[in-house]
Image (tube, rainbow, N blue to C red):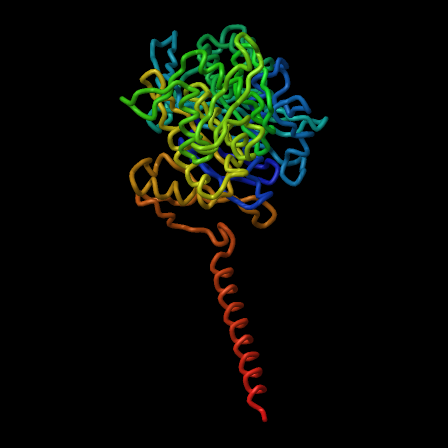
Length: 471
């Protein structure tokens, strides 16, 4: 689970500042305020980790990648090749990580890992790593740091703080190098007698990025038939195209989801149907083969208790648009981070409010008697979702510290990320101006217009009445 994020000189962002990420993190803001580009960088990091090209520090993507960012220059703030792209990530470790020094028999342990990276353009305009810093932390305190530096025109250097690295006899500083942006090469590690722990740092980074999933704002249209051969997809896809396959796979695997500790779990398909019903979208939901042994499946829904059962393609668009969000939130592996863009799209305002309860349930869900510890980072424009979330904090259904809310806006030529202070009573203590538009201006304008129209109507009525009294 990601705990912190900071991005500098990436697209619209000059500097996000240190950003706390909670189990449920919500990003609000106007269109083109930079919300989506935060997730785009994370996707670029993931596709770099998945890439077979170990020499490329940042995989910017193409039309077949998770994200396509164009050239490195297009990634930089104001397209300025003299800028240095920096990012810092912090994440909670699933299990504590131990750094054992075989030379001194000392051991350090941490429950959180931080990674900071700086990249600048080389002579060809391609990204090159200037600095990579790992920090192992325990209960908020830094136990050790591993620092790789390679400034232009200088030899690369590797050093540590809180842990003494010992170069081997054949140590060659000129051969120090990285794989991608986060991993010391085998040759670099071999140059030290006690640097094997760096492999654990890199593996933890890969595990964190591999468990990062994205659901875009435009989901696939509903189909009359869905093909499923029995495979389990990694996720529902960025357009939700694998949502039905994921639902069928989870159900076939007898996965059961519970709302909390001690609660009885429900079979995966039943749990998704439960939330569709609770959202008020449909009365019943079922996915079944068109005939025994067939690979074609149809999704049948009943909109209310007296309605006929029909295919999902024959009902409103909202069902097919919210379904991938529900499936992804509960289908992803434990300790995953899911970045969702506008899960409320095509939903009625009341359903948007109920969606907040679904998001809370997803971060609090249990599976096989253990917390799933799933993190949701949600881009939204829904005031109704926020109002319900504030209510649930006030009711104690979710702790204020388990929620982080940010307002994105353009300011002085760059995007600005303002944290909203949510207290234990569900109140936002620093409500931004024009957060959801200027509501008071609309109310005042409506009132003035109504009074003026009433005044004119009375004036016309008086004039007409005076005219009728003339002899």
